[in-house]
Image 1 (cartoon, rainbow, N blue to C red):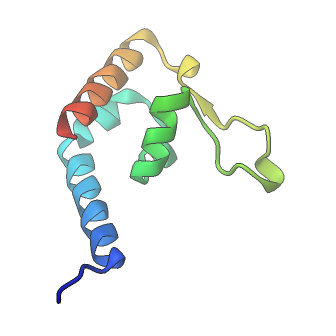
Image 2: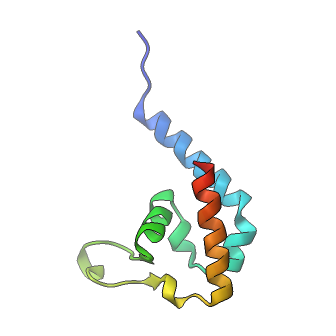
Length: 91
């Protein structure tokens, strides 16, 4: 009987995210997004879903938004939309 360890799947997902992030490094640089908003896939997905990003949901950062897409200039928002489109097509 064979089985897959969850850690292996997590490792594969992290490597896939890092490869995607590296492939789109030029867009991230032009986007004006803080590096924390795309440090992990979970951070990125939170930003895409809610339009803002927080360092943490509890503790000192409760109810504190650290970054919002409203802070981007129109050109930067267009680059963000390119990134979002590439992320959704990458699946």
